[in-house]
View 1 (tube, rainbow, N blue to C red):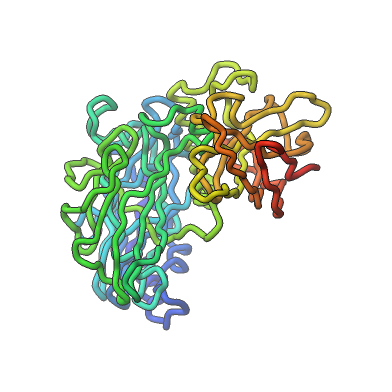
View 2 (view 1 turned 90 degrees about the vertical axis):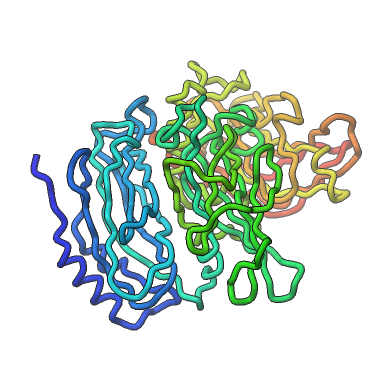
Amino acid sequence: MVRRLLTVPVLLATLAATTAAPPTSAEESGSAAAARAPALQVHRGGPDKTVTFHRGRTGDVLLKVTVSARGVSWAERTNESAVVSAYVDGHYATDIVITSSSPVKRQFALGRLGKGRHTLRLHDAGQRSRSDAGVATLRNVGFKTVRRSSAAYAAVRNAPVLYGRTLKAFGGRFQNNRTDSPLVAWHQVLPAAKHGHSLIEYSVIWSNEDGGTATAGLMAKWGRTTDIEWIYRVEVDAKGNRVPRTGVFQGPNHGTQRFRGKYDGTHPLLQTCTENNNVCDKVKGSMRFALSMRGDLPAGQPREHVMDVHPWTYQVMAREMVREHKIESTSTPATWDVGDQRTYLYLAVTHDTDPVGSASGTGLAVDVQLKGDPTTYTSDHWQSPLLFTVNRDGPAATTVELPAGTTAADVASVAVRRVPIGTDSGASLTVTHLKRAFFLGKNYLPRSSFARWHGSVTLTSGSPTAVIWSS
């Protein structure tokens, strides 16, 4: 097999030409030049590949890249991933866990870089790669410098870097190359007490959680088997600078703790340190994940919307469940055990309880009727309301398991149901949106949503159910 080598001067010339032109937005981009650059192939035991690029100004730089690895599948034990480690000017920036032979668009943070020329070095991390068959391919390599005038400037400047989990029970070092791997991240801007200041909260999606909520509960209460947690929150001033001693993180047992750890420039260093992906501020990890946190969560959307924007995360989610034998051998809605995740209807609804604050005692379930089928299929499988219903206000995701082979054309109606948790408090529950409803396709990627609804139905103890959509 002939190995293709990168022609560095060609890429350098095209990138330099791109950055020499006046930027058209608040972020300096090198992606147009990258689209014309050759693909990079990184082989186990082969030479590192380097990309020389130029920045026209100082700032935090994001790496945009499309990755794949021939012969790799997250569903196959010992063949789950290929890992490429990225270094910028000799500084360890991030690991890139490649989970599929199909191309996936990824984005990572390279830290603050000065004006001028820089070198990105890509290394096949043999010890960190479970698969010895995969050849990592990186295409469309591009760079963005986030300028001070960008709306995302403060979020990118203060974003944390997450080190990998090293728990002995799950394989010690490098375990995130096959389990509970950090996939994508984002930020939310929240109001602060001081005028002109803001709170920025950062969240991460992991491929699963080896501890915490049971798999069936994840599907019913959260509409997925990934794990989503906020990891870091900090106050910033009007210039986007961190206010000293305001950084906090979500520590073990979901406790909020003051950040007292180290920084890489302006970026706090954290580590996944529990089996349910809480974090610590003492870093001893062997893998580093500098996920781009430039993206935000639009108002009115559940956190699972970030997965919808990055549909490949559903594929990783489902393949991990198959490989870890968390899927029942024969899928059937008659049991609450998790079946083939392609048989579920993935829904997102918005609701609020009255009086405010009573959501913990009043759950929401979703019921589905199919054409010509008298069975009512439910998100909670008629199980424990505490463990299987949505008991939080606002937009939320859930799933309903349906018979194998069910398609959008078979769905007759979607209904919502009020479920008391413990003693009925009498609180009402008002549903205002069905935001999406879709199935996963053969390759575990989401199909198009086929149902949406906006209105207002109030569920009470006397009138606990209502149909919100019908075909």
